[in-house]
Length: 508
Image (cartoon, rainbow, N blue to C red; front, side):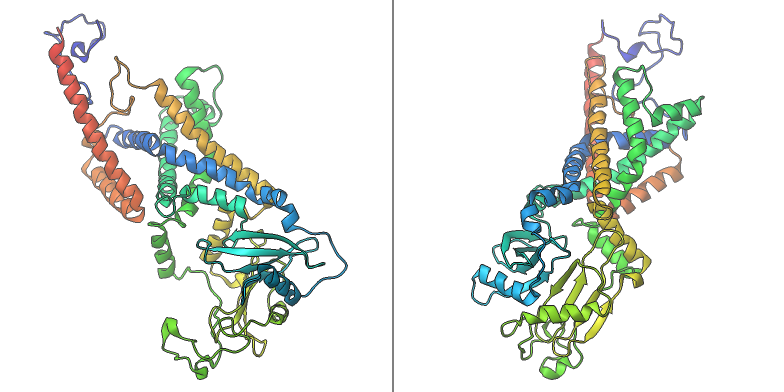
């Protein structure tokens, strides 16, 4: 005969029959909690359980794809070494000559480069980039030219400011949106948003377990490194707790920086930075007296559509010699690294821009706007003068992408992402060990008891509700999925009560 909760008494050795025993709680409903008796820890446990169970697959995919992406800067150097590098030569062609070679290679009438990235050092190639309507957003066609001989060593699609080549771009899009476009970006935002919450809930549970232990030092030690000799669920739990301890700060960092790229929470971050004047300074490309050439200074986005000159990027054919001249001007101002991008004007009556693009530490992202007529610098932006928040944002993004410290940085990110992925796998193995059986019919596989807020003081309930509303507004996908969790929990609770009523009615 299977055991039922109908024979519960205060004395474990009692042999009272169901007719004489104290009333028991219905299956699927927890016993009433005393107000203030550990309700917050139970709430964290339930949140950690449901978020891990239901959002875990999204976090797992993001972690695995992120681990692969972390190594791509180094893999790219190996996979595309013949394109990115060339034999060192004693002579060096001018940027104008290299640009003309790239234009001839493209072979399209009026093909005008949108940007040029000179070879950063001996043995590297120059990138001459062109717009192509067949490519996606932020993509360009790049022709790689040997600066010594003028040989075209490659013609590839590059992506974004990082200039990612096809392999890295493919993995980047896999990590970002599963190659599903804007719809797929919901997955990565869901993973980034919940990762931090799950990590903080796990930290709370970790501290709760240590503080409630009579042997705190031993318990903390066992939760920093897995205790030996344990098997089954306890062994899995030990690994889950200890790995979670070591990846906690990294997980919070990846969550916070990942949110800045998201569709729904990202604009809120941008608005906050703008309100606090934490934005990243940008170089001003307007030219003194440009309005005198026929452009209406009050025309807003339609300004600077006056007559074009030979040096205008949107007028007659661009003069390739300006790439050399503009770069020379910038190098006398604040450009002192080989990793730069030279961009012709996007519209008539505006300046050329020379932008440093060195993301490795020390960061070099100074920029200069140069008047193509006078070859004088008209505006400059120096990273050293960025607000602290803007510097932290720059370093945070580059740290997320593994750009700051080369291969060691990439290996750390790979290990961190691997640790996060292992936490998800360990969590599911723990759930499987305690999955529903005929004897244990708790909804979802032995989740913590429901109804924990009924045992909370009024101020606790108010704080939880206020926190949920605030987090749901700041992180919309968390708000939507949290509401879905509540609905699911209620439905599973009703199902458990119904099933319990059936079992109770069938009991002898």
